[in-house]
Image (cartoon, rainbow, N blue to C red; front, side, top):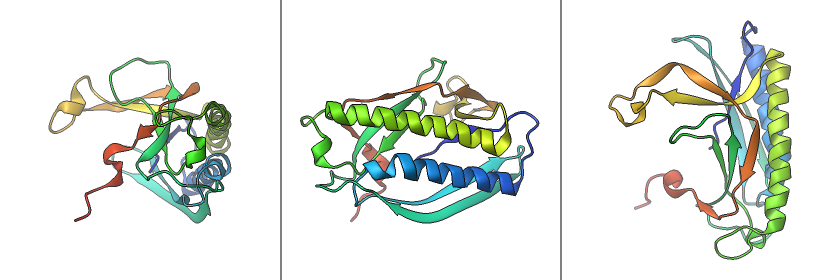
Length: 196
């Protein structure tokens, strides 16, 4: 699962049709830019969107149209990921925006700890195209001032408290760039519970 945030411009009309347009646009962006570079064993199943209208009401939309990866070869284990960090003009501990891409093939590795230079260059181009498309999806859906962004949700130290203490409203950060990590990363616990 990848979670992305889009911020609608102040005063934009927030309705079901515009949310569906945005969800369709995100599906197109991911399926056009990332999916062809992933293993044929990797499938984008659906994109789901939630639009927050205020503290207590939301709209929801989805697009379910499975799209399979286009890169043949030996697929690396499901826990292996190529990581893209999305750059924002803010510095704080934890919670920075990243995308963990699973489903890469072994031919993309340089050695047992790093991706090949060709893979890094290719995914840097792909990440830039995805970033540009996501800004355009926000603009097309809600108008000028709508952006692909990251959200900082917790008060200082709030993520360690029980219950957690959230910023209200969340702090929005414009995504202005990206960095593709050369290290082969792990999705760690993102695979779910252990199978007995």
